[in-house]
Length: 272
Image (cartoon, rainbow, N blue to C red; front, side, top):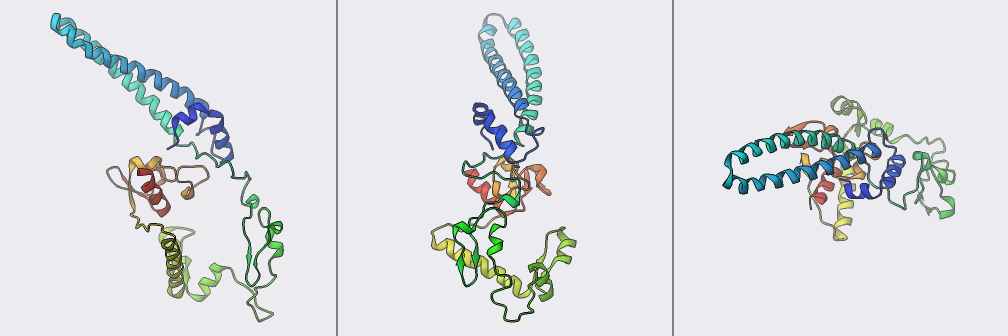
């Protein structure tokens, strides 16, 4: 969850984060949030003062029980009204805060989309990595790539997209995956599935060799975890990784299914 003190201390930085991460400024309304934040804190201070008055009733009750009883009833009525008002303020305050994005890293370059992504590395089989001066933004390095696959021995060889190749080899089933889970999902079968397991094991062995702890994730998380920030698993730019409205189904009580492993790993670290 974004630290309210940080937003309060530097609202311009949050306005910039909203702009850079392309979050709807009407939903992540910093000015309105500041108004509500001030009203929330002022009202909470009044409620705390009211609670202090309630504690003083014990002294009055010893000398004038009737006056203490009447005063207590008045304080309870005022308290209920103030708590109700506070609840409305906090609800809107939290709804806006839910849309606040993570703070952008100062080293992150700004861009309009994928076409402006900064290239870090580009590798060509048999040649290695391209030099830094051949890198740029978007697909700058593409002009230095081989016009045909380096492993192709046939001059008429035509490379296929991985999805098309997977269907042709019977290793990727997008039709059944789409029917079961929706678009962009696919079943991996046969050697393609084995290859994914092999790549996963290769990565696990590498991480274990670096002393990184292996984790097994579960699929359910508590509602309080909804405000954990995990940008690597965002559903859309700048939005929290896991919120009640972003989950698919409620499991039981305050528990929700969190479908992405990145979310569950983030919640594990957040909980500490």
